[in-house]
Amino acid sequence: MSNFFHNAGNVVDEISRAFTQALRFAARTIRRLSWPALLGAALVLAFIVSILPLALTLFAIFLVVKLVMGACDGQRGRVIKEPLQ
Image (cartoon, rainbow, N blue to C red; front, side, top):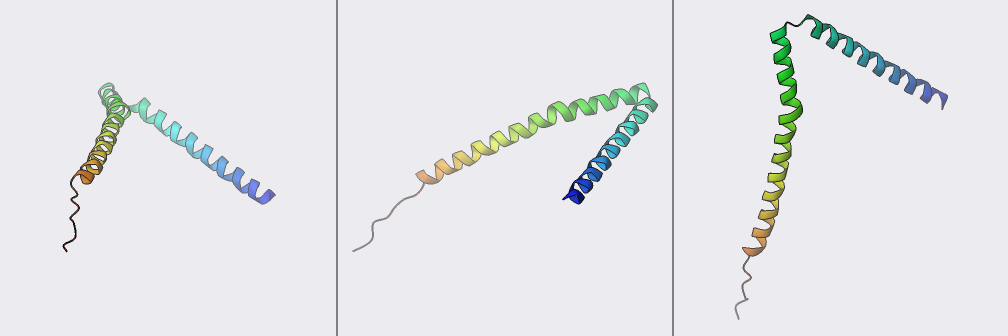
């Protein structure tokens, strides 16, 4: 069982190192950006953070409405015929 915890600890250490390296890389990249490039990056990030989730949420809402309307319409359109005698 201690081997499991040792391996889990190694995974957590590796994840923390990778996260730290990614943050350092991002900080160096932001430090090197010019003002117009930094503005462009901020605008793209604002788009991703605000408008994209709104679009995905609206898509999900309209999809659910369409499925509900289709389910309701399917019940109304059925005609049961009497068997011929």
